[in-house]
Image (cartoon, rainbow, N blue to C red; front, side, top):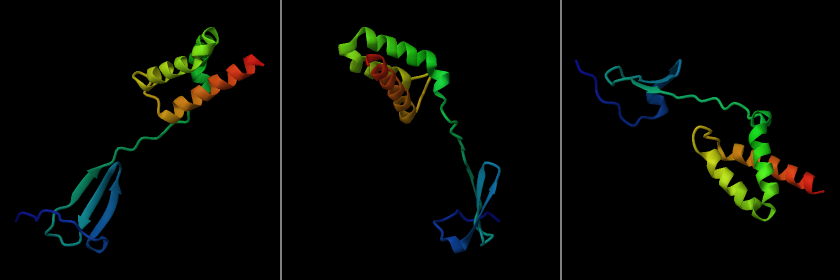
Length: 109
């Protein structure tokens, strides 16, 4: 016999479990089909500024050569870092930009 299609259920109507990266939603009523959801789990690795040292130095040099256009240089680099192959998250780009600004402030003293 064919099982019924799953419906919107309350927690007392289902058992939820996990099998590796799958979430399994099993109805207590055995006549209703079980649902398997594939979970994509991405672990964020901490960003190490040391890995971006060459990029930070390059941005700093560009900004010091064009002191009046430093903001334009930073905006252009933000756009570059958002695209492949980097695909950095906005907070990671902010971290790089903060480091560049900090170095520019240190150099100008």
